[in-house]
Length: 351
Image (cartoon, rainbow, N blue to C red; front, side, top):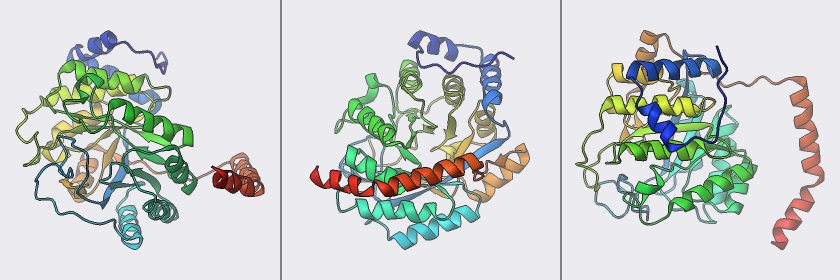
């Protein structure tokens, strides 16, 4: 088997050609690539908690948390740290290896940052990977989250640059790319994907994947969402996307970004077991697990376990073993950090 090259120079026509392959050929190619980089019967399991719900100033046309639309969603304040940690502990007991926390903000304020960084520290102390989605970040905020130990930052591009202003007008595509760059610069991993079924055309789906695949570093996690149509949003009556087109999108994402976890994300509540199984066959190897995905429904955890059992799939376990060299390197890094700590704070104060 010829090893798959990891590329960052895909053309739109190459991606169109992948989408145009006969379905069986596309799935076979995606599964072949998947097996070169991952165990085909392991799926990474994450749990997502809304730590602050509603009243977001952005006008994303798909989002029930936008303050621009009347969806009946009650506004909530930032959750207490103890409640977040309790939810994380319960998620771990149910098999999650990553705990994701989302806040309906355009971007966090200075007074919010001590709370969210402490959430990161305490959730990490449970042995879970951590992920947050808090909106746009500046360099200082990205640095604070990285220093707290945040593993992943989620900031989806949603769609292609061409279609973006049909979905959101309160920020630009470049705003999103700038945040992704700051996350990378701070040393965190990137979780970035998009939403299918918002009325985009085939080139928009190809364009989104091209943008992601041609980033200097592929996102470590690529959530592929199916639009959840919520009454009160401008997209409540948009036409359904052909399920096979969604599966094709999963397969093409797997081929373009062979080392990334491709997450079967929002919209699973409306997918039957057969469609989800096709997505796993196409290379999806990550899911959100639990009864709610931020503010929309998600298949119940017990049903997910039953489906995993029927398919012979097992949850991916977080690697926690380290070599002696890694332990020594971590110790040296910690000592160096402690030695230079006063320099860091002096620099920050002078800035």
